[in-house]
Each structure stands twice: as C-alpha cells, then as structure tokens.
Length: 425
Length: 162
Image (cartoon, rainbow over all chains, first blue to last red; front, side):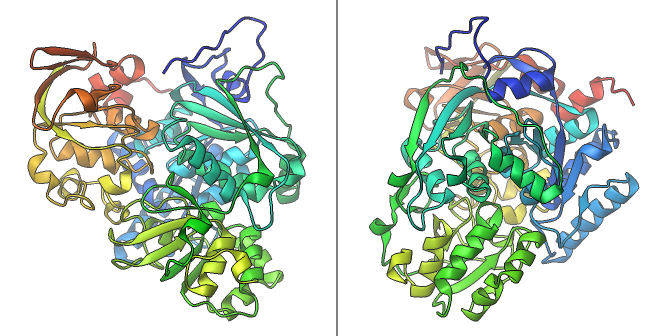
C-alpha cells in the first residue's frame, strides 16, 4: 500500500514521528527503517522464559539497562501445574542473579496494567514480549509487542529496529451513551475498518472533550489496537493522562503533542453518542454486531476481567448490574491488578460480585488465553470482556466466544442469555 | 536464494491461536511444537507440511506475540510463507527464526493447492508453471537476519559493548 503524504520541510510532525525521531536521534518519516532506543522493555512469565533461553543461546546473558526492564508474572499466575511453577522459578532465578529491581512476582497483577500504573510515561517507546503491549498507548507511549527473540535483543542492546508506521488520526467527539464504554468504541473501530486495515499504521486518537473518555476506556481501546493490527495505538496526552500519572505515582510528567499541521493518511471521526452496545461474534474480533442482533442466545460462562476490561470502572459497572441479583451462568471476575482489586474491595464491588455468585480473584490471564481458572468446554457459549474470540482461544475449539464490554457481560450473567443492561435494570 | 515447493493454501486472518494454542506455549522444543501446528483446525497438518510452501490471504499470523507460531511452522517442514499481508509481530518472528516470509498481494488468486512454485526470496519473483508473479522480496535488516540464519546467529555477529 502506498500513501500519498507530501513531506515538505515545513510539515509538522505526528506523535508517532516525534516519539520515533527522539528514539532514533534523527528526523524520521513513515516508511523509514530505523534503529531506535527503547525506554522500557518488558516480559511476563509465559514469554519471559523463552526470552531468557534466547539470551542464553546467544551467549549474551547481559542487560543493557537493568532499570528499564520490567517483569511481571501473569499468564501462569498462580501456577496451575509443575511446568508453570518451574518456568516462574527459572525467571525468578534470572531476576535475582541479574538484580532486576522492577520484578513483580505472582500477586501484583497483569503486566500491561502494572506498566500503566508504575512505569510508562507519555512519549516513551515500550517494547514487550506480549502483543497487548499496545495498552501503554493509553498514556501516549509508542508501545508494541514483539516476539521473544526481538525482546531478548532489545534487553541486550537497549535498541530495536522497526519500520516507521504511517499515521492515521481518529477523533472522538461528544459523549458516550448509558452503559456504553471504551470496549464499544474499540469494537466500533473494528466494525468499520476490520482487522486488516491498519496493518503498517499507527493510530493516534484525539479526544475533543478529555473528561468524556477516562483512562480506563483509553486503556481498553489501546489494548485492542493489536486486534486492529495497528503497529501502535496512542492517545494524545491531555490533562487526564497527566492526572492519572500524578495520582498513581505522585509525579508530574511532561506531555507530548503532535504538531497542529501534522499530516495523516486519513482522519476518521467517531461521534461517541452514536456508538451502540456492541459484541464480537465468533470467531473473529471484527465480526461485530449490535447486542440486539444476538440477544437471547443462551450463555454458559461469563468472564469479566483481563488486560482489556479488568479495571475499576469495569468492576463498578458489573457490580451495579448484579447488585442484589444472582448470576445464572458461571461467572468469573478478575481485576487486572492488586491495586484495582484493593480499591474495588474498599468500594464494595468485590462483595457485591461475590454475593451475586461470581468467583473473584486477581492478576491472572488464565481464562483469556485458555490457560487455567476457567476453561470453556465443547459447544459452550462464552461472553468475555477480554480481547480475542479466535477458535480455541479460551479452551475447546468447539466453544463459541462473544466479546463485549462489562455492562453486556454482567447483564448476560444475570439473565443467562446475551442481554443488555436495560433488560436487567 | 531460490525456494521450491508444493503449495498448501490457507485463508485470511490465520491467527496464532490456530497456529499453536496457548496450552503448548510452556515449551520451545521445535519437534514438540511441530506435532501440534494448526491443531485446532487440522491436527494432521504436520504430516503433509514437509517441503511445502504456505500461500495465505490477509494478516497471516495475527494475534499474540508467541514466537512458537513461527518455530512450529518451520519445524513442521514448511519452507516459506507467501501471504497477501502479515501481522507485524509474526513477520518478525518468522525472519528471526530463519523462515522466509514474502508479501504478495493477490497471491491467493494466482496459485492453486498443490501447484509447485519457485520463489526468489530477494527479488520477490514467484514462478508458477510459465507465469511469473512479482511479489515483495525480503530486503534490508530482515534479509540480513534471515541470511545469518535467524536473530540469535545475527546477534552473535554484532560486537556489543559492555
């Protein structure tokens, strides 16, 4: 694909170009193949042992900058079998031997959430051995997943290579309707553009009224950037970004903005008040339908959580809907981190969810990847707030997975069939 | 480098959960992974893979960063993948493990299952019978890594300062 962007000298820079120009130490344009410094490099247990194996096989068990490496255990947390426990033991040994300070053992939370809470700043370049690394784009970082070998090379050298993606601008205008959240916006983008359109592009999201789209929603949309096959998805930092980092870490970060005259491949505006409650039907994330098109389908199992929708606002919505009611499906709820779990406990959401009959734990990716803590049986129908409904993703390849935001998932759990909040409340 | 092989055709949006399900990701042994490649859609795939070339549609390898997806396909004996487009992470993983991946718009309309094709991975020329199809050859960094035999071998050629 060739895009017609006229690159005159006077042209302003997009967020993507500004970040990658800083990282590479030269002025970059889309299509350039560059070598860039990386600010944060990270892995979790399921990819991490592979990263370390690559470092060992290359005979280069050394780290360019120990402080820039972040490790969290989440995929195999807590370990469901001996091999998983062994993998964690191996990585623990590595972290101890190489004195990794930013090491988060079982009990902290999901890597992408920890990166948001503790490490990533606007304008950072973040590379991690997990595809959902796009989540850090919520804070205006250029963040992308890579495989174990690429991440090993980045840990050793402090650098990586990449092709500068073409920039695409999405504008969020107005306010969302009742019960409609960031997940519906992510699915709306997938409904319109499908899963292959943004291949080779970086999406930069501009919010007209910053307060209309809180950090939790931004994290969900950025998380789903990989499902759009975008190279990165970044929210242009604003006061919400700054306030989030100040609240979480007590520091005042510098914002970074694209220039007003920066040029994009195209601009697409989403009028938030027109976004419907949406689901992805089996077996592809871009098979997007209005919830009303699939309502009344019987459901066996509801999962609320993951790096996509395991944040405080997701739990608040779920708690509001199930409050004083009993769930009819199997219902598993997994806040993305310890800090979210604790806040949800203080606010009474955990108690409400447990009283409604949900099983609640925190800080594991288990169900989302068909790993453990809630696997789907053949022919079961699942409604999940996670990010993928591919064949076999959550267990049996005969299971059918519908993806949704927290309000549809909670209403579905209460009624035992796909439902919207209005059917319950 | 010229690669020749029999075509196995696959569709659009082949994702990494289909290529190798997460339950197999606790291991990196290529022989083990090869036994389970494409298990959710065709558990017998590994029996017909040896020496073949995969021809697929859009965003081949989309989804997770699991490098085992590229390792499993290569270990099963697949010599190269031609696809209309690749997911970015999978493309890098394939190159990093010495598996040639060629971007080739409309290729699914040009070749049929079981055709024998020849690919020049640098020029991107694909020959089917007496027809020549121009695809995007592998160049730059990706070619350097592929020629070294993968990223580990490539890293060994670099002098990295302490």
